[in-house]
Image (cartoon, rainbow, N blue to C red; front, side):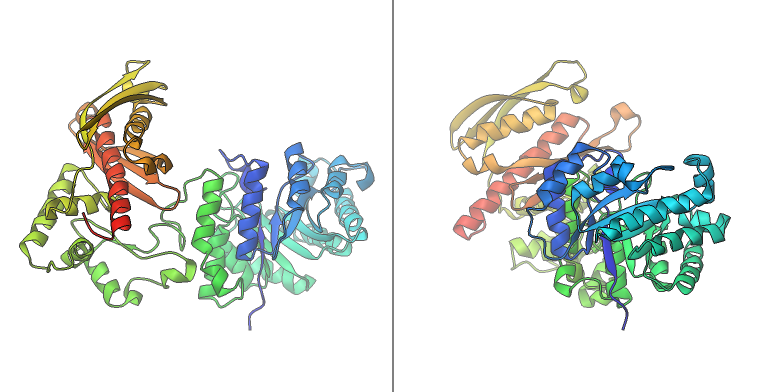
Length: 530
């Protein structure tokens, strides 16, 4: 049986070095809880010697009752020509008071002589002294051999001697780091195999993604004998990022039979990836393997037909194994049977060859010709079906609206206000709101006016807004497609609008978003279709 693979997540340290990422202490605590629940063994949570915020975090994280994970403080070997007791960064790791520490040290002779500018022997002493300093204090030490693969290719004997110094100091695991992300998979396999054979100790792998090989390199290292894998949960990190731990975990467990986490925990893989992305204020790439929204999405008619008959025909695993779901996308190439399933959710009596089904198919093709796209906005397509079937009742009527910006170029102005006039059941409501740009102002004004009649809209807000310019004779004459994602805190939905005016396209999507929410609430309350 394959050995248990140790998971080491560096989202809160390596991931925090990604462009645009900045975690608050509370952000880090939320991510720790999620990673612990899914079964991560080690959570590298920051460098306490680098900033006061990390020290504050290490104090607060002790209040959490973690079930699976050990918190790791990260730092470097002592500075040259000093002692661990005289190095503030080393001492800060003691102050963090974690059960385990990760220590990185130079293993590439070029870095030793040209970057930190010291003697090769002194660097070996720095590694041994620092690792033994912590093991003497009964800390578990994981040694990150920085730039190991470059160092091994440049001076194999010296790179190995660095690992031996760490092992001599008592390091529990020696992690081979592809810090520049430039090593190829077969090189990773060959070098990891050689190191494992020579040192016969626990070996780990830490890969960056500069050549797009981080996941593949991590898998090859495990095949060569590594039992400890480092990465970030959704793959972000400095430069091109780190090995995507969610992809590595699923590949190892579902494809290669390695015990990584329990099957029940694996079913939370997608949810955890989305939570980490949300807290990090990063939109999870929709085509991310296993966990992305499009990972099990099917659009082509033949694909949909095949997967409907037997999921194995076009899916390599069942989506529920990783907590994801199959999506049969709505488009003109989806096939009539796919559209029929969506129609029958509204009217189960309709058949494939009925006139109404044909009418809806024709309407879909007409709208896509105009620039609409419904695979990412199925809520909007449901409204199209309802209108075609006469199962739609307008819940408010727009009299007029007006947006005013501080600058003449409306779509780009930073501050705007909107005035809106609506009628609900014969009652008129006029209101205004201010927002960041005209669309935000319009959204706030519309919901403010309708909250008088529909209080549940107080819980609704936009979570995403995308604009795409469609093909046209010139940019100024082109249509735009607006996608709006909304949430009420428990569910989310996406709607779409198309126009040659960005405000009008946004308005169409906004109205559909609110009407979809109100219709769903009405039907849930009264258990009937409108």
